[in-house]
Amino acid sequence: MGVVEPIDRQVGQRIAAAREERGMSQRAFAAQLGWPSGTLANYESGRRRLTLSHLAHIARTLDRSPAAFLVESPTAALLLERIGGDEELSRQVAYFISTLDDPLPEPP
Image (cartoon, rainbow, N blue to C red; front, top):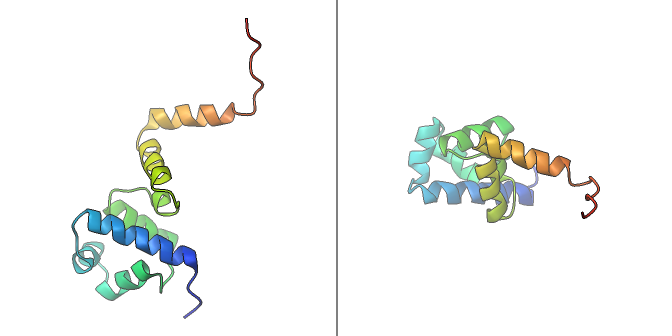
């Protein structure tokens, strides 16, 4: 097995926290995912690296955005969840971001 990277451990901890928020044991969640509980334990501890497809499967099962597990800030994770779940809000944020470099209009 390779070196455990901090990001692997951090994402695993975020997954474990999201699972615990739902009141699910590791064994019950692994069963819901269709995986052995040892596999989930290795992902949550960071001993095993997650593939994007496994992260997406975990996120879908927890009704979360995969991106929310990749950011450090809980506030940023909540924003990603909110923006990702609302198409109109996503368009508004995209528009806002696209105009950040535009010059400010002259005052009247």
